[in-house]
Amino acid sequence: MNLRRLILPAALAALVAAAPAFAADNPDATRLSQRLTVLDADPSMNTFAAYERLQARQAVTTLDQAAKRDRPGALYVAERRVQIAEAAARSQSMQRELDRLDRERSELLVEASQQDAARARAESERLRLQAQMQAEEAERLRVQSEADAASLQDVETALKGVAGAQAARLNAAREREAKLAREEAELVTGGKLPAAKRDNRGEVFALAKGSFGAGKASLSDGAQTTVKTLAAYADASSSPGVRVDVTAVDAKLAQRRAEAVRDALVAGGWPQGKVQVSGKSGKTDRTEVLVQSK
Image (tube, rainbow, N blue to C red; front, side, top):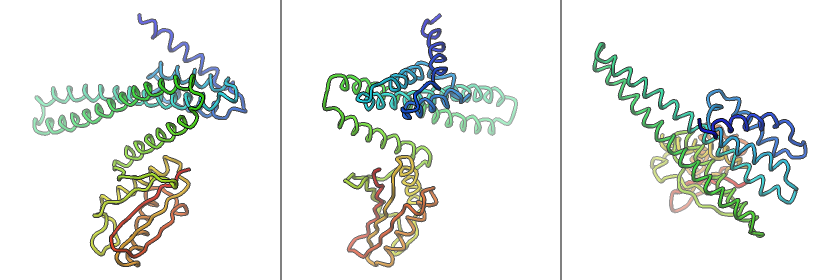
């Protein structure tokens, strides 16, 4: 029997039992511990990623016991370990679901010989495509988890020997946070974020030129999905606010378009009170959405 399979569950159980002992003056350790507790309590995922969850527990314990000067580095490591544990659990859970779908597909293929063959083949194809999508997503999560682990190892090594790594850690954390928020938004809405550029205010996303019809103030279906994805991204990245700037040949048309984008953001779940809109006349049509940095 694999010794690791015997040790990991026992070690993880011991760490879970110790979670409530985190000091009240270290809210980050408590918060991360609670995320792991939620993961442990989820019956759909608590049997997976035992090793990753053990590493996360150990990192949170290290954070709780770290001296104040060491807490920023320990917090970064603990945050990443918890994220890796969550992603690994989701990936393995999806793999189990994929196996179930494969078994169901096999049963349907056998049943096809006794029932309407055309209907059974159509259902089998649907399940095959669903299983393929599940497999692709599971593989993406697995690759992402491995990449995160490799990146984290590099950061941990740098933290031990580089005195001036604080700025680099913060930048890496922000970039990783933005990437995770982007992936979460696209996964939730099924849309894609447009190209963006970053300045000292935040990220500026430019909507495609075909987002509005000629002389129209209503968003196309594709643009509606894009704006809802922007709303999900702003929420996932904890942005303090969003600003919509629209330029059109006619200032009134530009204002109506800006308000249409605002309404789509609100429909996507973003608070209306956190949206500023501006429409003005100009030589070319342009629609930009600024997601402010926190």
